[in-house]
Image (cartoon, rainbow, N blue to C red; front, side, top):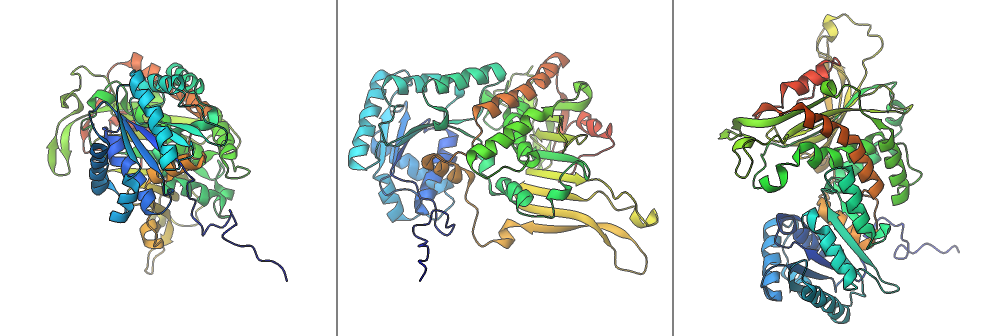
Length: 508
């Protein structure tokens, strides 16, 4: 009789969840919005789903005169307000037993000595096994100070059989030179495989579904090329302004904030070749090959656009323009809208433009990828029969209503031959009973598991800056961004950019 594989011992059995082994996390910047709204709630949600080890520990580090109990209260408030899953007292009690807090500045040697002793104590009483991730939810200007202190006080070096990892948030520099400096700083303390750069868009279910759609279905791959695709539009639109982020946003702008990371990463997933497998190295090879094939048009004045939102109406109320936002310089030339045209210099995509755009105070909040196909080479219908027929398109909706829409032509009921666009729609909420995990849940768990497929590596970051830097330099010489009315869809120069190619932006 043949032995049957025991599913409890089979690492490939997808019915079994991936659970982190003994470990802890040190969170720098616990008082910031990112920690309170995303990181802490995600940690609770992972614990609530049974994906963290029983002895998991969370140590906060900040310039506050708090006791461990004060830190626990901060986490409690954040979880109650922002967690995705139901609050359960028994889960909270076990998780809170592993909370610690270390007060101090980033240049405080005494505080980092205390942090080292705290981690050693957690290894003893919580069984974290020397495995610790250092999450830097702090401005990039402090990354060097913190990783230097971690090295100085022996916190970055793992004992045999254990691990130490560092997690950093975007922005990964503000240009190519600063990105290289940041990468060198991190690499001087942690090995490449222990550095995790978080791009939360890559943790979204629908972003990963781009890969599933392309490579698990025979109907798409044969037409996923320049023979059939007319162009691709990648949009991340927000209906909000900068809120209280003037100190960060003014001087950074839409292109650095979104295009350099989120949109170029989305483009790489849409356009890359099929990887040999879905392990981290194979995905990284294909994404980097794609980014290395990306080129800019020669005439950046005709193929890029930028704008700055002015006052207008949003959601039924009057809103101020960017220059009137609190904390923004009245002479600021920072763009709140950016659009660029890119090409891919390879056989698959030769001649297919990729249009990337992002902006604040636009018509609605939406992130989507639209693959727009060429018209049929011959239509055996009268012009009147097809006057309402547009291009076929596959639209992958990343947020907020996650799913996909396929637009194609169909006959209108009646005695006449009339063809009109119709949509075939797939929505995650209507097709699956399981709710999607929040992006930070997936990414934090991947950090603790040491699984890096969704994290851009330093070569991807540097290549992205090589693509964007010439555009930023061109804009710096050009003068001020074009104003656009809040609640609309951006500056007229962006519409003109596509009109020159005989195309129009989608209105999601």
